[in-house]
Length: 169
Image 1 (cartoon, rainbow, N blue to C red):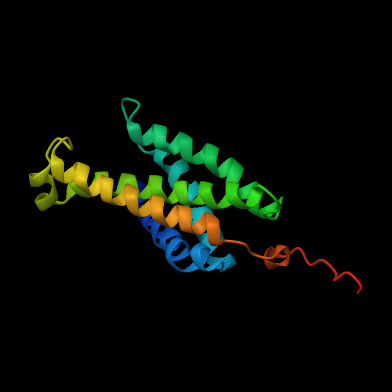
Image 2: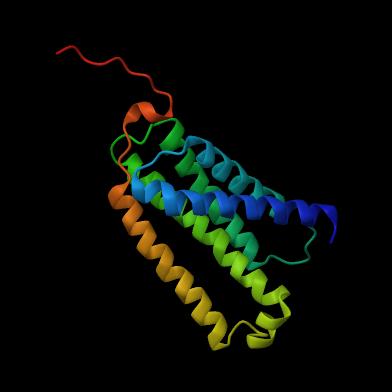
């Protein structure tokens, strides 16, 4: 595996792992986890960017996912860091971040079915039921956790560094 591909895969896995920490232990519990968030957002954007730097001969679905991810990140990051999750920016951040993670996991499942011999044997063209079942299960889990996260994630505005003085009595 060329070093550029290895680097791309490594940051993709870091993005997925850090995103899963947020999805399972952060957003649904209304926990901010700013360190995990920074790692997730940085590595997710880096995954999309480095995907375009890999050699290719034709436009692939993964490139479309990369474009969608970068567009989503253009809303998610300002929602968090500029608008501090105020008003509608809270649900824009959470739903966008969940979707960013889902896109990465979707591509991971595709790659697993391409590269892992046992999975490839079950769905060599990725049109077979095992592939559809795996992707369907992932989608359902993300829908459930996404809805839960949007409903429960209500952090205070000071959590991400906007130290606002308390209003007098």
